[in-house]
Structure formats: C-alpha cells, structure tokens
Image (cartoon, helix red, strand yellow):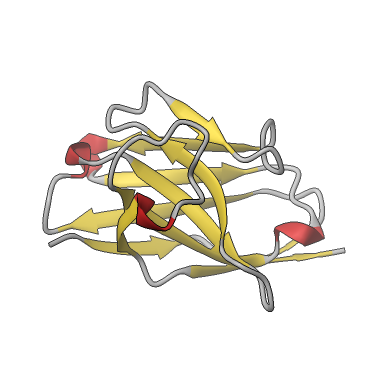
Length: 126
C-alpha cells in the first residue's frame, strides 16, 4: 500500500510558476514509475507528465512540454512538478499517481495507474 499526498497548489497569475510536491509513504517511491495528471471542471482527466523510477526517462503531454518539469528525489520519497509560464487553461486539480508500467506515449489508458493522491488545486488567473 502506498499513500500519496500532493501539496503546493494555489492561485497564481498567468505567466507565473508553481511547484507541486507528491510525498509518498508506505513503500519506497523508487519501486514505481510515477505520473502527474490533472482534471479541470467538466473535463476528462488528462495526463500531464511521467517519470521512470529513476527519473532518467520522462514524458510530457504536448500541452505542457517546455513549460513543466517532472522530477523526483527517491531519497526523500517525493516527486515534483515544476510548472512555469502557467496559463489559465492549466487550471485543474492535479493528481500524482504510481504507474503500473512504462507506457511510452500511451498514458491515457485506464490501467496505467495504481495508487492516487487526493489532488491539489491549481488556479491560474488571466
């Protein structure tokens, strides 16, 4: 069993930055590939970024590529999402999740994720 807790969300103006954290407990984070996803009101869940267990391989949704950076510190059992140049369309609840494998470019599949955090709200004002 893995417990994931996201933090770092908040209200920011367009063009600003936020850094989300995902703290894990129960099991060592290095056992898992990990991902960030988001869900805006009235919209379906959307993949944002993924990191291999070591952090050496990452993958991003086109919508955030070049603006967001996923990273992890396995010694601290924590994953991060640095979000720069934020846009109003980035407004969503952001979730971290363990991945059930490495899925290349196919991260929208329903069986890609195991454990989920409770989410943290990110609101970007225009």
